[in-house]
Amino acid sequence: MPVYEYRQLPINISEQDSEYKGYFDAANEHKLALKKCLDCDLLRGEPGAACPWCASMNSEWEQVSGKGTIYSYQIVPHSILPGFRDWTPYPIVLVELDEQVDQPNLGDGLRITANLVNENMDAEDEENVAIGKRVEVCFMDVENGFSLPQFRLSDEPPAGDVWRYPVP
Image (cartoon, rainbow, N blue to C red; front, side, top):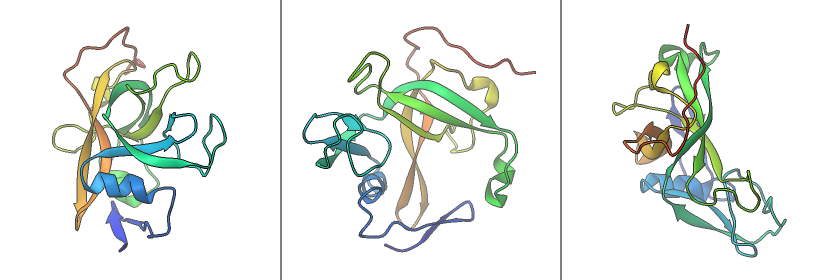
């Protein structure tokens, strides 16, 4: 796989990369896929050789809906990386996907981190970001067929309370 560039950062996912290749292969088709354990049937958002729930080494990539709720977020006020300086401030969201809420235990869930963007693929405005808001995956086409999963706010109403840090 060639080296791609996103905001002046090189991205190199080799053919031998068992942790990320399936994720990026699916993203290039505008699909969100995560690893599913073949022994306990639970999905995991973070890469790793073994299932965090049962320690099995057996897994496969499975497509998920890409719909979820903002579980937490951070607004990055300034960037030390030159490629992101023109994007600040920008939100990074921890999204709890609709699949696997409260599994395997109450309070557990399938969570992944990404940028929150608007319909123009620019950073979403800080005043629109809040815990509890509904989001959906979208894909930022970077170059030569390479795409990065991002999230954007959806039209779905929140299921519960919405909370955000007060903006000064």
